[in-house]
Image 1 (tube, rainbow, N blue to C red):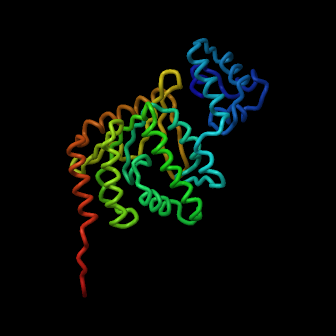
Image 2: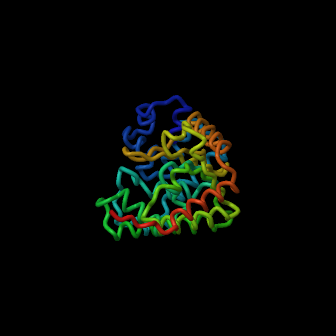
Image 3: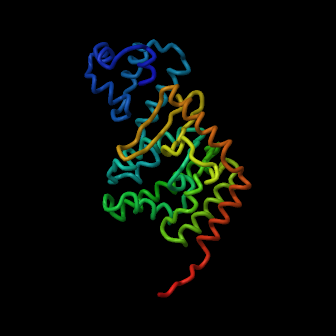
Length: 285
């Protein structure tokens, strides 16, 4: 809706005046913090001059689907959002479920769709600390596992394309044993026909993508425009403007060409897996 308003050249105040509602209502609808109603969306499309039946039907379908509870709701019941990394988990789960392909670059940890249960639990405990109790952590781990099953095994399956910085393989999460098992899990996921994993090696040097992790969500033609999702200390950000999405697509494509091919990636993951699994020599003073 924000993109359509921008293309129409209207400000929030101008739209609110035509809708005879508050500016904050329009803002909430654009940021996903308000519950859209079909009549409101129809009127907004009229104001924005949307005439394409495909776009109209797509938006109205999203409105109707969005008013229904998603499969993820039960996992989030009672779990409080946390600005550092989990500003609005339900919004991301909804976007990911509607997507046809997810492309990502991770610089600190394994992508959520590629994490083992123990790795996910250790990571969430480290990131969220005392902000969430063990029961909430268990629910969030359950959500990640449900995401994996719902998206990777569905028909048609979600296409997943992930580039991992090599540091992700070296960084120990949850201890050496957890890390070794997590890399076994990664190799199993990477063997799926709809999942491709590549590693950006240390030898590739610094890339502009190292400024932060990236997730690009691509949708079928009748399900809306592609978006970029980024997360940081101040919360989540969804980038929907065409020029922003194109920029991040260029960055991800460049990463893809600079990273190791799938065979070399598997060999490198196996080497790190053996390093984590190898017994560590004890040293004595």
